[in-house]
Length: 245
Ligand code: FPP
Image (cartoon, rainbow, N blue to C red; front, top):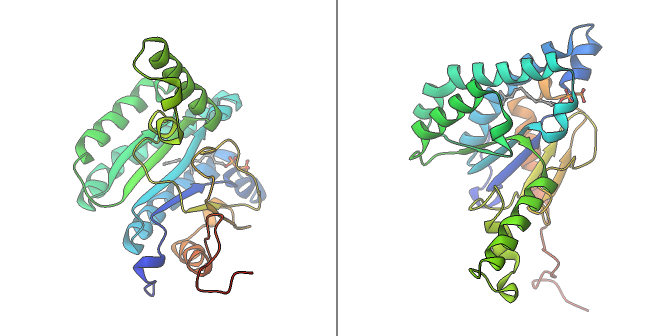
């Protein structure tokens, strides 16, 4: 990838990896085949994002709503996740990647939880790309849980109601301590948030592509980063280098 100025590389990229099922069905194959191919793209994109200088990459791997899928598909997804963690643990560590998970991960199968804990512990002190896997994640449920924690703190006298501000809310979300996403990429032509990082994406730039996730290559990532580099982010303000009327 030809180099983008580091100043224009998004610090945090979030991705909705959509289109696995449709891609597989379009080839007359089972949906699970699409997820298998999608897992390969995770390997490529993690490596490419780290090389490009992205600091945090958050992947929407399984939403709370995804529990409504057929049990065979859900099992296949978690078994793919365990395979990914088993196969990648050494490579991730060697590449200085730090793994973190967000979401209601206590609902995941035991082996998944164990492997997540293992990889998180092994990579805890790494200072390269932070890879965040959103698992059994729901933006609204994360906000509800944060509100419950804040209400309990008020009830117990540890927090005054007028001390509740944006920072207190952010600190009680599962994304606590992470920068807000600068760029959201969603593959496969859908243009919606699907309950992903609702609070955190107030000022995120959106990039939608028709490419299905199993075909999303390093070059497609580069293209998204290039488009981001050309965007003019004003955060509700006006540019002071242009005349203001
Ligand atoms: C959405 O495609 C994708 C998912 C619900 C799962 C994403 C999982 C992977 C890419 C593989 C495993 C993950 C890791 C981190 C190793 P969809 O099935 O909703 O596609 P459709 O809209 O075409 O049906």
